[in-house]
Length: 246
Image (tube, rainbow, N blue to C red; front, side, top):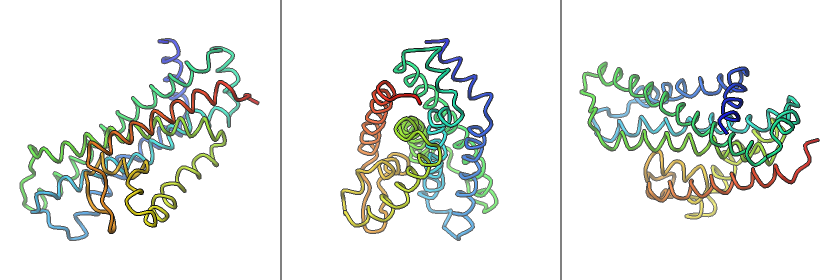
């Protein structure tokens, strides 16, 4: 198992595109925090810090694509055959990919959180407002955002195993978030909050209203997202075992 983990990490070190994705995450958070302040929101509002740092969770869109590349990227570059020849147990291969990419999702979330804190503190200082480092809701939001990044990285591995083409997998994942959850979700009322991205928002941002609908409570969003992560992990393993490589 340790050899498989080292091999997976080595693959990540030798490919540039996953690192570009992870590097974009803190940039998104910095832009989101800055945009919130520049838009004229009241930084004296105690809830503003938590709202600003909720962008850490939104960066999970990048870790979702990062996870997709774990499997679909190998099919694209035709290295998946060598991977399975060196380790015939496909379940172990996918299991390690799930683990490694979830860990990198956590690390990406931590870096994004640190960047978001520094940018937010700088903006608060610029507005001559004391930054409340002891704000528990802010730290809970950051923690939820980190967990959301990890879950979406693992879900991305599952999507990449189910849809082996990189373009198709990424397009399907983003279309789901933008169209199904963003548009169709509004038509199905309270059921929309049980969908993956909305569950992630509940975990990473708390039960804030989106349009006329409310999200699940934070613990509920975390539980639902954990179930989705488990389901995609099982699908990734079972599909990879049964499907022909070619």
